[in-house]
Amino acid sequence: MFSLNDTMRYYLCPGPTCMRKGINGLCGVVHEQMGCDVRNGDVFIFINGERKLMKLLHAEDGGMVMYVKRLEAGRFRLPSYDPQSRTYSMEWRDLVVMVEGIIESPQNRLRRLRAERTEYHV
Image (cartoon, rainbow, N blue to C red; front, side):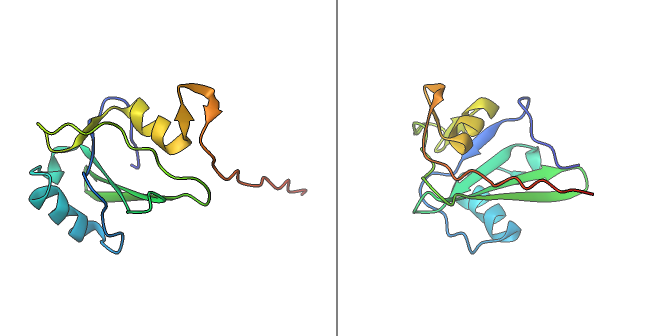
């Protein structure tokens, strides 16, 4: 079921991606632009031009899964590009750092909106 972890390989698609694309459209980007097979179990990451919206595409047993993260504040910071693999090869921790906006240390973060937590009384 929905699971990403540090044993998987992560690849960030180079350049901005049109976020109107769904699972089928992103599978085409993986094949045509990145030269990869989306069915191999790797996680493919796509970011829009404003760097405020991210989609992750992953094949699991039984089907494809797409995760979406939209920033209400700040922007995603991109890692270094690897021209040999035509992508940004990443590890789990690189994805976490990018999503959380961490710069060098957990105390030094890029701006992110904090979700309000409401207490419910029963």
